[in-house]
Length: 295
Image (cartoon, rainbow, N blue to C red):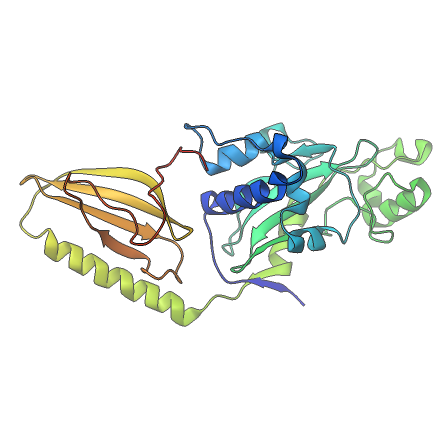
């Protein structure tokens, strides 16, 4: 039976959720492994540079449970496609699939193991982990990464990847099989399917049309002179992207947009301006956080 996800995120939103969970996990266990986000970094860049150390395999109890179905080490860990090996460059890092699922793909394994690929994604309610089977080199019988039982590993690998095994594998007992990126992607899309609220999506579309009509009315007869992005702000835990529109008569209109369709203030809204002519943050939300500030 396939898993489902009900909310489509962009990579930056998923990265913020992962970084937040990693910080919580590490704060009591490995506080020295926490790295602050640099002013010039996006959340995606932050997670890929930091790699979240011990946390990626244990981000939340649910992620730990999901990934615990296969035994593997994390001595070797890679998130960046440009630094990938074992054929994993097409599946690791932050990626969005045609079905709308955004995930973080990770290549991991102990020093004695053949590295495998696992992913972390958001299902609409919580972070989840998943280890693809198809195209992903691990022992489907022992439920462990290749390298923990040479004879069992060789037998399993020959039955799964016989035509792709390296010539030396049969002689030294090791398993050396590259990740099959296309098969891994197909596995993920088959296993994790979108189950969003169609009525909710229709409401979002209607809300956008109403907001655009209201904005068009507000700007009628006024010449727009500049549109300035103000970065990502924090609004009750949701990422709100803010634009400031300036007009030739000195007027200023600030627009906030979030991808969280269940957010109490809706997906699109006009922000209030303070006495200094600057937009205020989300009412009753946390302080505005511009892109690049510490997460």
